[in-house]
Length: 269
Image 1 (cartoon, rainbow, N blue to C red):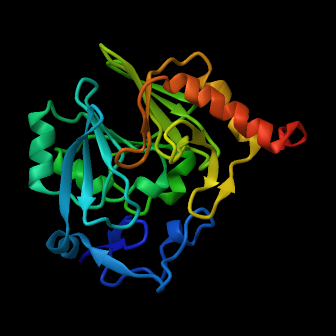
Image 2: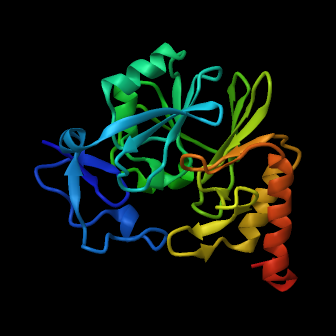
């Protein structure tokens, strides 16, 4: 039986003779059902129409899809930490070989449910590596696996310079990945901190496509979680949407701008 995949968000579901009526991730108010209605595909079908895009993205190796499919995120590889950050909907032998050639993957870390995609298929292809998903977002996992590990709390030290930090606002378990490398420190932000089009700021969004700001009290929590964390660069969710250089200052200025816009009266809600 196939694992049906939502065409709007790219999330793969449990095997079934027929697709679900709706995708729970897309019917949630943070996302949306495609304008033509709920539509499904399978990995097998997708592999005949799409290919993996394997490129460097401003210093980090990325994996995306061509042509664009669903949410156009790209995964990033941190070989020094053994981490694949995020997941995409298409898994190919070429992409797996490229990751192994570059040092391999010991674990997959996902920022939030919109990027679960084919995370289980990626883990299987990489030899059954663990997939780290925050416990607060357990309900959104549409395809379960013994490889999925639900982490708890606000930080998780992965070793080798990598740390997961829970930064709520988008989802209760939304996370970022901080990595201290030999030459620079980076923050892989997903949508927990959404890099803006000017690539000089981040925004704090409950819903990105529906343009709903995150609650101020949760943005304050994210600000506190990142206090004292040093990083040079911030990598957003897709190709080129990054802040290269002075990333810490850009995030601090973005917090200041957000709270200045909403006013102090709203900061306790």
